[in-house]
Amino acid sequence: MDVKDALDILKENGYKYTGKREDMIGFFAGENRYRSAKDLLGFMEPTYNGISYDTIYRNLHLFSELGILESTELNGEKQFRIKCDTHHHHHFICKDCGFTKEVLTCPMDDIRSELDRFIVQDHKFEIYGLCPACQ
Image (cartoon, rainbow, N blue to C red; front, side):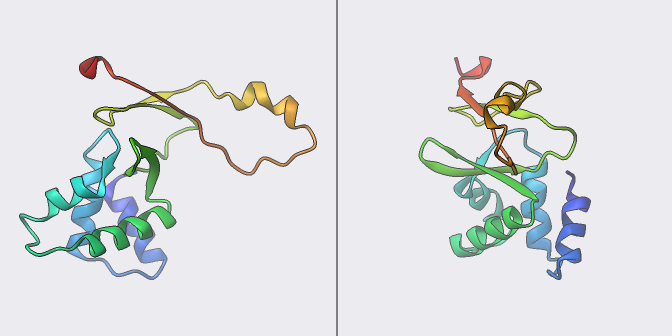
């Protein structure tokens, strides 16, 4: 997803476009990794002096709710990345730097037969470890 697509989603759902929101989304769009609220705050503070964690968290929650951002729990902290909108895939996530690599294999292909009387509505598969740079 790019910044324009994300801003369109905000507008379609009745939320105002602001420079802050565009910059927040741009921060995630420019990263191929999960990032924390603290990372976002550090990015935003030089431009928006006095921006609060409350503003950061409120917008992160909104972006997640609207499907603009994906979230995961990494080292005991909630982290976010721009939503992938290409094709069905899962992620390898580096536990040190949050770098994310697509994993095209889906375990649901093997598990589906074990769930023959169940309706699977969604699933998420993540693998955690260290990327080559962090090893």
